[in-house]
Image 1 (cartoon, rainbow, N blue to C red):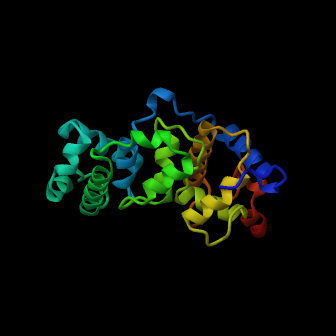
Image 2: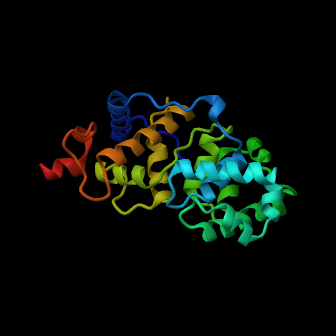
Length: 234
């Protein structure tokens, strides 16, 4: 991973964006006692495709409560897991991906446990995660940033990527991995893991309220002054 470049103009744009978003939406800081175990965070990501966060959280909590351990979840039949994941948008797909992922962890570690990643560098740990079935850059970053690992990496999902593209901070057709590779080197070097988490959550709010996939509402957008898309619509 490249080191942050202080002289890149995108760094100051990101600082201004963060300040404007905090002014509009207020602070969104994840308390340390709300950070979950890395396996919980991984499971929530693997089953969460096209599903609201609150539902995925409920499903993840429900699995652990019912089975008692992630190894027991790994041993459950796909059909049984599908029933338990009825809240998810794609329960059957989520069940198969989850089982494949948990079994792969156990095959590599002897148990469904990710504690060993805490001793690895961030890039090495993310490479390890992304080699698992159903895990790509977004989930790998989510595990490293939002769990108890608390590492300074940026989680990038649909809202985040779309806003960065419209602002002109990443290539227009960048997928999540390319967006991550473009943004990480230019993030403000003073940002902590918590700052990156808050940035992601604030951008998610912006994507839901203004920078929607269709018919974006540029009027009144707090980052309009720094947005290439909004400038072109004037």
